[in-house]
Length: 381
Image (cartoon, rainbow, N blue to C red; front, side, top):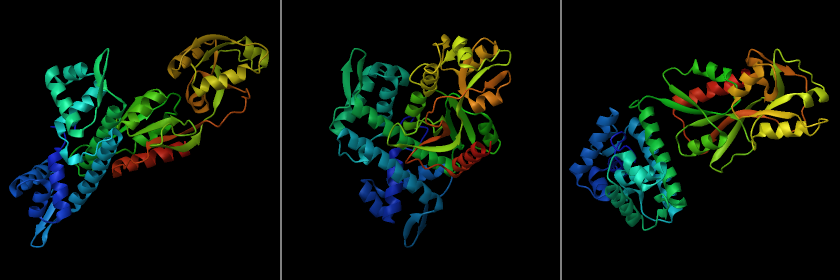
């Protein structure tokens, strides 16, 4: 795991899981290859970290407390992610043989882009990092890295292992939030032209949940979602999830419309649209495809004043009064200084606003409550 001091140790989690399943500290110690005092110490560290008893100890054995049952479920989900990552590499090594340092090193290499960059990021020497990385390869019995001009980098299988390591880490972070050992957080990715009012309404109901919103392109936010760096994406859906491990949930329609500044003459005839200067998105964004379909129906192709994917830049140019653009209906309605022109657009797939989530994501109760508030605000707004 990365940042080994920030999360419970893998060995401690494995000791707790073994004790929970065996109902006997002695039997669990034998299964985990530990002495009984060592196993008890590992569980004690976890209980001190979480601030709650994880095992109810009695004459009939040791059984998970309510807090322990919650942590045990998250440990199983963590192991499932690690097993999936190992399987993707072609390794049959059990997760219990992995170490925090090895996984943190591999994740750092993948995120930094090379051995040298990861060593700098972690503040250790390159030989030290290389020994740990090669030791992980030896443990797994597979090659994780390949040589490039930039040095050694993670190969495709190694990158998938790193993604699964990151998702395994999320499971334990979720457990700590559910057990109130860490603040409850929600990391939301927001796409361009996303209606902002529903988010503001949902934030009023977030309570003690610490919500962060990060704007980004669809491709960038998808990558972060699949790596566990954000919990959900909100914005225009693509009609089908870009990866099988993601799912889309439509919440409302928000079609594109032709917009201009309040001072623009706003000639909505085909000749007027063709004579106007336009701000367009760069391909392959759907907004550009709709614009091109509209241009194909005009008597002449309009001139392109600016190509930009930034909604803020587009709005600023329109407010100057000299251009037209496609924006979302909700964005135009909520933005002073813009007006919508009565221009029928060529038939296209409906533009829907919604959530993109990981299929196997299990939100905490606080996160689930925020999602419900967000859903309601999008439907009602």
